[in-house]
Image 1 (cartoon, helix red, strand yellow):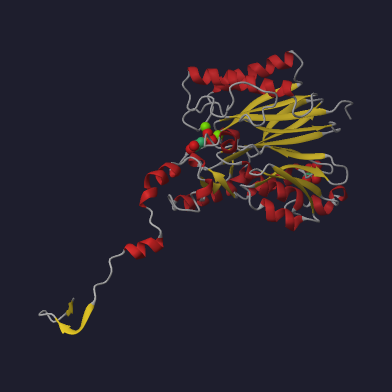
Image 2 (cartoon, helix red, strand yellow; image 1 turned 90 degrees about the horizontal axis):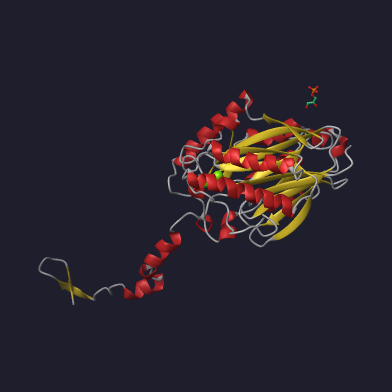
Amino acid sequence: MAEQKLTLSVIKADVGGFVGHSWVHPDLIKEAQRKMDEAKKKRLLIDAQVLNCGDDIELIMTHNKGIDNSDIHELAWNSFVASTEVAKKLKMYGAGQDLLADAFSGNIKGMGPGVAEMEFFERRSEPVIVFMADKCSPGAWNLPVFRMFADPFCSPGLVIDIGMHQGFDFEVVDVYESKIITLHCPDEMYELLMFIGAHEKYMITKVTRHTDGEIACAASTQKLSLIAGKYVGKDDPVLVVRAQSGFPAVGEILEPFSFPHTVAGWTRGSHHGPLMPVAFKNATPSRLDGPPRVICAGYQLANGKLIGPRDMFDDPIFDYTRKQACEAAEYFRRHGPFEPHRLPLEEMEYTTMPQIMEKLKSRFIAMKDKKETAKKPKKVAVNSHSKSGEMEID
Ligand code: 13P
Ligand code: 13P
Ligand code: MG
Ligand code: MG
């Protein structure tokens, strides 16, 4: 086991789409990788790779500086700024979309980019799995993370591996109230599900092993609309999971994604749709800017070096899931602008709803007033008849 703790930081941002919101131009990736290589030369980083899922750039970095380190966060910020400059030159769509601050100020959290970080002693063998999603909110991770760490029908390791019998602790954040609660599974499974089932409000931020508090999983939970106060793009989160030996096996970590569960996002960040697991080359949302995609990069760490990535969803076994996702996408699309395809009103972000309301508000009439202003029925003279034979009116 290595002497010094290793930190794995995955930090992501959308700094411009090619074309529209569908992908990242290779020149933006090259620029970010150049910044990463510079930092490796300066020994700020041990290793780094730049990947993309749809229009989001992911910086996958290893170092010894710990989580929430301002040097690492500043490096990520500067890399995104540098890629934004390239995006501006190429007139990419929404250049600098997720950079919501004018200048870096200590911690990149709260400035737009999404962050998932964990610190640990590298084991004799350290398999780690990095998930990256496009066109969805961070609530997308709740279902799969619950299943990999708490559902024995997904992870047989919970039954077979004695090292997992004490279960895991789930840290959950209320993203609207900025409050955190930690719940233990299996003891508090039902309470946990009550909260995380509402995946747009309660989001799993991290999972630790109950016996020793060892970090098992970290997720980005930054919500752009809450930072910006308006819709600027969807959050498109990242998730990091450690595998094997007291943690779920790699296959148990992938297993929940065999069901293309419903997530919030898709076009204009305002629609429910299935999360489709795809190979890197297919992380190219197209139909109505979707449906939402997730890719999975597998690594073995070797003294902090990223050995990989392996493109974990590039496997025919996920073809069936992808077919199901296509069917679900079609089903949702047939609803057009109706819920539950469109998100509920309170979550409609990329919308002119407030302006439409402003324009029409004077035309809304209280029901009781409507009754009073309605034309009063004229009195009818009993027993008198009009020439036409109908009841005569006074
Ligand atoms: P192998 O026998 O191929 O090493 O697989 C072991 C295992 O536990 C797979 O989940
Ligand atoms: P992104 O959040 O991926 O930029 O997508 C935004 C959007 O509006 C797609 O229709
Ligand atoms: Mg975009
Ligand atoms: Mg995106």
